[in-house]
Amino acid sequence: MPRQTDCQQATQGLLQVYLTLLATESQALMDPGSDSDSDLDSQSSDDEIEQISTSSVILNSILSLHAYHYISDWSPIPKSNANLQLLLNDWKINHPDIFQSYVRVTPACFDLLTATLGDDPVFHNQSNIPQMPVAEQLAIALFCFGHYGNAANTMKTALWAGIGYGTVCLVTSWVMRAVCGEQFHQAALHWPDEATIECAKLWVEENSCPAWWDGWAMVDGTLVSLHARPGFYGNTWYDCKSNYSMNVQVCYSVLPLYC
Image (cartoon, rainbow, N blue to C red; front, side):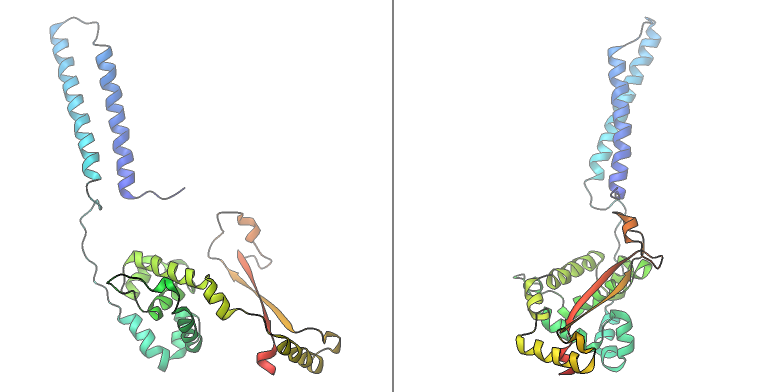
């Protein structure tokens, strides 16, 4: 079930109170009472007036609740992108091991991804306000992909990178759209030509089992552990190592390594 915001929860509670008061008022108008005593009639009228007044207050409260974007007073949170700049401009050059622990790729791989994804239209717009540099967006997205649990919390990621909470989701979405785009697929994923395949077959015959001479590609896989049991078809993600995980398989040519 989707999580309700504080405004939605407050609105739902006020609506229940409002509907209850309306039902009470309607019942009072339809059944004024069998007692003809003037004092009781006067008291009943006063109660009806009070109930109508209360329902009006509840209705006005609902209208006021939706007149503002936030229920509580908004105050700015001091943030700085010093950590992100330190990662990209210092650690990537002088401490690649620390850099890799944050983004889970080597500096060379990171630069290659930045150059390959940089031309994607998702990172360019016609607005007068330019987007964040592609390197910064990629670093934020890779930081989220490489962590789980509290470490990947949107709030903590935003405070670490010095950006807004919503910007974390927006940047991650842009990077994923670029990675899933046809332009990136054509640049990063392609099959070798016939000469490349023949050279790979020759290496397999000379350095491996001769019966495998016709093989020119390799397939490898790894299990990527999930932080928690998925909500859909959860049991199907349970693996032989007693974890919830997904299997990633990669097929690649052996030629670039040996020819």
